[in-house]
Figure 1 (cartoon, one colour):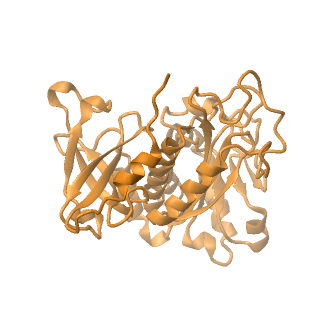
Figure 2 (cartoon, one colour):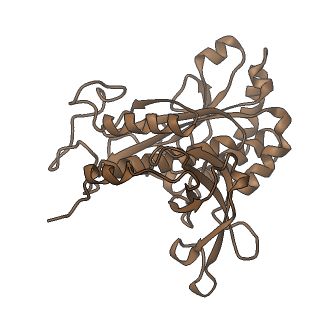
Length: 361
């Protein structure tokens, strides 16, 4: 028999008064896989208002695939601060960059180089919105809500569905949404996805580096919420083989010129640049340099093929989609449908800006 902790018992302790001069700050970082999220808590004697007020901290990198045991100290540099939706009150979530003993960024720290590029193109005012798809799994790692000895009915009724025979896990989705709002995440919406047990939330529009910060913290919050429901979250881009949709992180992107009158010209120019370095983007769009996306970008299930670049108006089977409203208005944004659900948003933002704003073809 498996023992489970009881949340009702926990509530008794969480209602104990917290001293006025003690604040719990949960430091969050990306581990050596480039996908995993780690965290640990630090007590501080004041309530920080900005990330730069939080001290640099360290941890054992040999346990996070980031260092050898003989030289294991890794350093956490706070970069973004959010309200803690789990501990409430003055307590905070502290997103951090990871640095090695020699003050160089860890291999999984893509934020530093991304931020440097964002600073270079600040005058272009790049905006991003990321549509984060994910799949809920039962504790046995089978999709949540699926029959244990079989499969649900074919895809069709599940996307944006309503009803207990069409959607599974709405409680988790609602809890996550509210927790993100409390934290200060710029969450824009959510919906049930095409495969049953699969969902999506959107972050943005955010300018520059902030979309990566907010998406990583939103992923952290999602995993923490799922803990409370004893359910797993996977960002695998193709969690179920066969005739089931995969999961992506469609990235909506624009610059100031794209958003202004006549901006469609600049959108088309950006697409032309993107067409000339498709392989470079594919390598940047999942943590395994395209290997994960091979299972997803097949040309089926609302995807383009991984080997070919394509673009079109309202075409969800293209690499780049121009929304129909954008084509009609003559300005707006483009949607890059290639990033995988387990992408590092910092890598996605960086390569998009390098290609379209800096002209690095």
